[in-house]
Amino acid sequence: KAGVTQTPRYLIKTRGQQVTLSCSPISGHRSVSWYQQTPGQGLQFLFEYFSETQRNKGNFPGRFSGRQFSNSRSEMNVSTLELGDSALYLCASSVRDSRERGKNIQYFGAGTRLSVL
Amino acid sequence: GIQVEQSPPDLILQEGANSTLRCNFSDSVNNLQWFHQNPWGQLINLFYIPSGTKQNGRLSATTVATERYSLLYISSSQTTDSGVYFCAVEIPRAGSYQLTFGKGTKLSVIP
Image 1 (cartoon, rainbow over the protein chains, first blue to last red):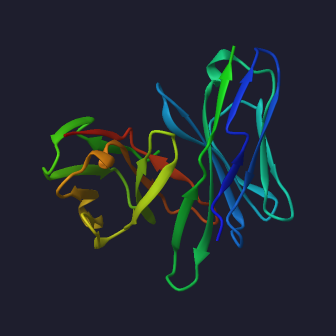
Image 2 (cartoon, rainbow over the protein chains, first blue to last red):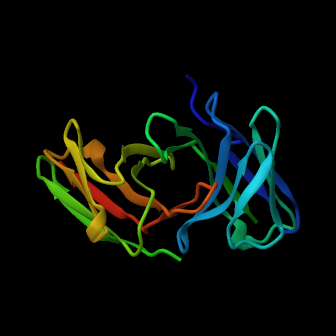
């Protein structure tokens, strides 16, 4: 079974531009979450989608948005890029394991490394 | 929100040595996972362990949920064990999966 796939792996943009990152979850997983990792703030939750609906959002400005398609693939968009948006963006997918109530294991992709110049 | 604290922040080991990494969390959790972040940035699942003890080869983990801590044991360390180890927890919140991460333990294993 293929893992979580993120594209592109690397991206260089300039301030003021916008960017779209893509995430394809593991087959059968319907929940997709996004995280930002920076040296200063560590790993921070951005948002989570399930069945095309945003269920939860972290403490990020409105410039950060996302969506999920009917095939569970997800995209996140950052508009009006700032230097501080330079980070590793990680996507995770998960499915609630019906064999064990409440069990949820998140599997991460390799990430997209965004540099804003 | 929930606080997740990992210790030590940095650890240097000679190859073959054993180590224990600790994760303390401030509230009840649904889910606790240990990850190893490789040099390319990918988070590799090590354990899903909201309670109890699990072992996988040279690695084992124990979570004592009532005392709000988890331990990751690495035995007979190898240079390939180097990297950053993260503990992440999910709090009970209806219908949403959100992991809160600790700041990690950076492990360096030297030959």
